[in-house]
Amino acid sequence: MQAPPDVLPRLVERVTATSAGLAAHLARFEGLHILMFSAPDIDAAAARLSAAGVGHGGVNTPGSRRTQRRAGPRGRRALRRGRGTREHDRAVRALPRPSGQAGRPGTRVFDLAGARLIIVPESGLAALLPGERPAALPALVACTVAVRDLDTTGESLLDNGIAAHRTPSGDLFVPAAGALGTAIVFH
Image (cartoon, rainbow, N blue to C red):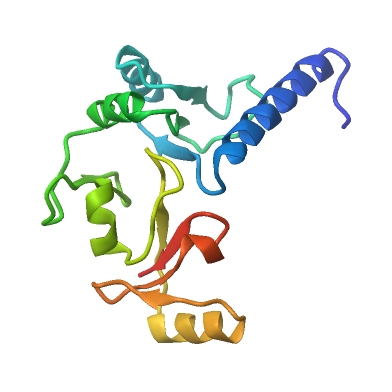
């Protein structure tokens, strides 16, 4: 790694800390461990998370001196997957008000400017993704990818030896076991 002499020690420290953190999370289970958000006032959003007791990766903006991550024009914040239900509950309370319940008890839907976050109790997961079981709780169990044509996507997955199933709503999904620990839903 090459960097100016005055920057190199801090850079090595940050890379080492990041690597150790990722290794610790991956030792618990394979899959998604970080959720990134964007906000018009990223400093206020980070302050709200901190006040609610939610662990986060801080604020990263294009002009910041942080070397761990680069961020888009409005800045981003990272919400780490907590070690237990208490931190999960604090994280949910720190989110904007839910826009709906997705028709299932305990399920909350958050509209996040072009994306949605759906929080589902473990008892409701099978109704969305049959056969999926989280390796630990709380967990980021799945992510969704928008595609132009589900049939073409299904054929491509099959041609590449990847097993896909249908959700009750008709979307395709690759189970976590076949997708490095996190189910991938194609919508």
